[in-house]
Amino acid sequence: MKEKKNNASTRKLVLMGLMIGISIILASTPLGLIPTPIVSATILHVPTIIMALLEGPIAGMGVGLAVGLATLVRALTSPTGVLDPLFINPFVSVFPRVLIGLSAYYGSVLGQKLFPKASFRETMGIIVGSALGSLTNTVGVLGMLALIYGSRVKELTGTKAITLLFTVAGTNGVMEIIVASILSVVIVKALHKIFY
Image (cartoon, rainbow, N blue to C red):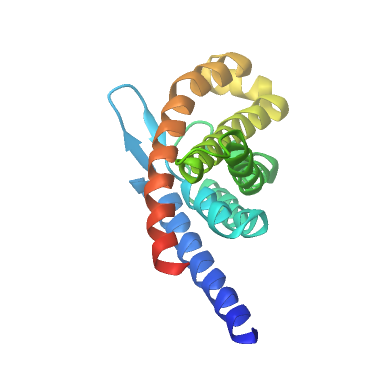
């Protein structure tokens, strides 16, 4: 019994280290963006979603914290976009990323309850969880930008913060949900076979 518990703890630590490492690489390089014909979708939040789906909300929140801190550090050290200086505020860069772990996990639980007898119950849980996690990232970050820096966003972009929120959520946000759902299904199922 004790050995089984130690194995579970070791597995969780290994997965957390792996997901945090991937998150830092994605946050520090252009690999965090996937160019598409219409918009570029970020995959920076996908390791947080995967961790929450595999090991629960606390583990997901831990990876989300690492993602947020990596974003904050990048905004401090090498800002590239006009809004990047606003990501120095942890309510914009860190807080929404921590919430991804919660929404992804409980979204997965909800998805499985919606399809309790279906043969694809697990897959639907992953899809709903990753969709809610991705939505939390998009709406959380943009919402905090609009709430805290509404006039500054307009000054920097020439667009009202609320207009920017709906435009980006309707374009990038939709692509990010699709990409996160596909990646999460493939990766979670593969890791589940390896580690569980």
